[in-house]
Length: 222
Image: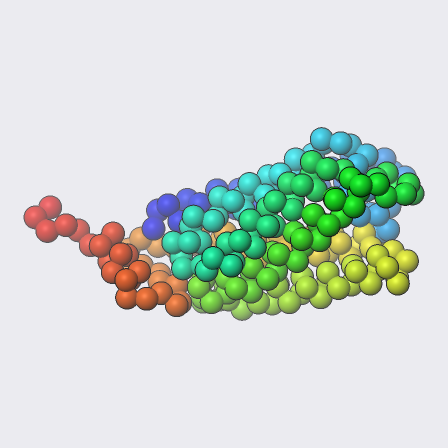
């Protein structure tokens, strides 16, 4: 369906733009910041309102663009709610800064932390739930990336507490890479939907199939 394909393409563009901005944000910060031991938020707080914060907002917007198309593709309400939670968590983390590295955490820093936790956990669970309605090869990729993301999130939790922040920056960046890849798989799958010879997601019922048939079948007498 054209709307579904356009949503996927627009989201892919947003994901690509967010990735470029995130890389630029790392290149512009002070050389004193170590990406292996400091999180992305530690980099972002040194440039409030800069490109890393913008990248997070763009990624959240790209996710929102996908929601109507995912509903048409048969995604359940829980998956949609989790994607909204991911987007809201990203926006909150972008707007509310963490503390400067080495300073004690204040209320804003705690809000930033837990908004990030919600986002990091919501997306992989949503990806797992989307595997069935999107179907095909995307299902395997989504399940694999979802499990990888949850494993990396557990590594981050270990590093943040008993691990004394050992390589927490590396763990977070690999986690972000896995989650952005998951989102890109969703967007690319929707972008690949065809109008003629319709690619039908798994789990669709007779009513949904009839709606698709009406859209792609010429009206009589035309």
